[in-house]
Length: 138
Image 1 (cartoon, rainbow, N blue to C red):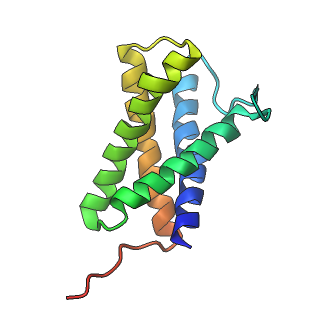
Image 2 (image 1 turned 135 degrees about the horizontal axis):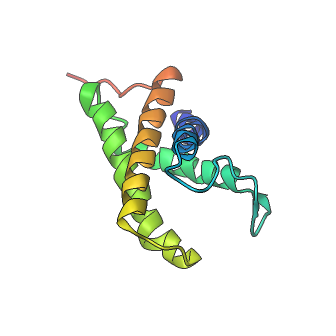
């Protein structure tokens, strides 16, 4: 059950935290593209934002696998840091080059900020859904 929660947390964190901050960046003129992109993406033709949220759900599983046993400040800070670094590194080193998109210091910094905030969202949704670190048998 916790794995379903982790996927849902990643999915929702993409729509609420990642795209919410992206909207603030857009409204502030920091990024040229609007959030919640509904352009269909191949091969299934689903809206881009839903594809992004699906992959956010998969990354939510990764975060829980790595950080699910942590508690306190380590839990929260871990989600922000791993959330920032993992997805951003994959996006900048794999996804952007495959799509022919430019990678710059600005895209790295923006990605780290957006994805760190997304990681905070995953941690928040996991707590809201009642997911807790397993208790050690002491």
